[in-house]
Length: 104
Image 1 (tube, rainbow, N blue to C red):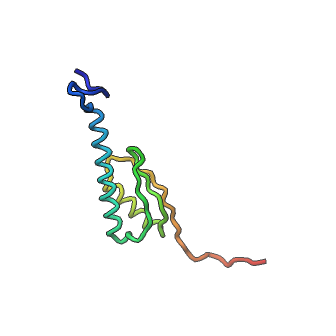
Image 2: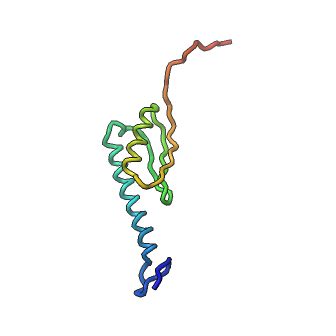
Image 3: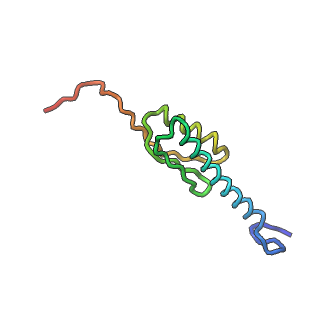
């Protein structure tokens, strides 16, 4: 008997649907763990949002520097191995100007 997207003989979910649900629950758990890890570390004060969008993870927010962004991305990839991650993190590095501003 095939279980390709249909119900099994007992009227339950198919194996395919069970795997999809398991992956979604696993992703939600892993995102929660990631958020705890980010909040408890040196980067805890940042407003980085982590959201599941299907099987993809979306990161949004603003970070103070490129090294900070890189550290967040390293942590995210460690926690979410096997899931695609899309990053929309904005770097607001405030560096001093390299020349004087000309006023007219």
